[in-house]
Image (cartoon, rainbow over all chains, first blue to last red):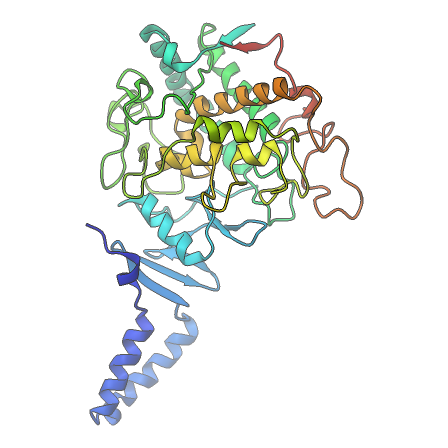
Length: 121
Length: 287
């Protein structure tokens, strides 16, 4: 019924890199040059996520700034042992932010995070 | 002086009065203020800030005072109502009478986890979620988490916490592993094979809103915490020579100084100390 975590991980960058490599091998490097130039400034403005995957049909993105699910920020907190808690999971913690995000998706079902969430004092 | 009853012994008239008073607090906005308080005071223990409600020794006294605030509001609506408790080691099934149409309603439906039965179902028109971190305006639950099943704590698991004669131990947070009733009952301390126990596990078992900082959006929160409150009594009875710790403010140089509440320090948002909350004699008793 749901995609498993193992089958879910393939980053957008990996997909792009593979596509470009294939294109270069096919001898169309010149044709791609404008595309590569066009990508550069956009990358500076919006750094690619460290990890991005589709999990149970939801987009998870983890980068230095935080965790997003379908583009919406997930409030992330830390426990003294270094593990992670989120606005969705306050009574359980996870070893990595990707595990934290997947657990949030499991709990959310088909619901979306709100864009503006209440914050702790 | 009034009695907090085991929820399984409530008559249908008592269930009706309890849920009617809760719905009235929701209508006036007082209920949502309580939800905000819980979320605001959840401070994780990596932060160098004061923790009053969770991952800290004042977990029991803070929630005792918090429940009293809720109960006083309820009693202003209906003086005959008190907070029932839910013994989750005994009534441990999604088909328990607790989750019936005439009380808290049942689990959420597949997909969006929306609660469809009982007085808190969104379709009844009286339970709009306004303090949440998702777009859901309806109450959500996922009893027993069928996709990744979890069981409620057993009597043996609870006893493991109650048997510990030490109230709490350094570093007074979620990593306190050397023993300590508080962390074993709050549920961060657990054998490696399990990871989560007791109080934390109950939040996870209910699922939906109960797994997050706005857990009191689900009225099941109060019945869960009334039982946690009763368990503090049981621990005190079992270990009459033990008491709340830390008894005095932590020494200069202790990393937890200023981050946890000692016996005679006030617990925000109230001007009350753990000592003030050690006993509820004369206020209420448990059946």
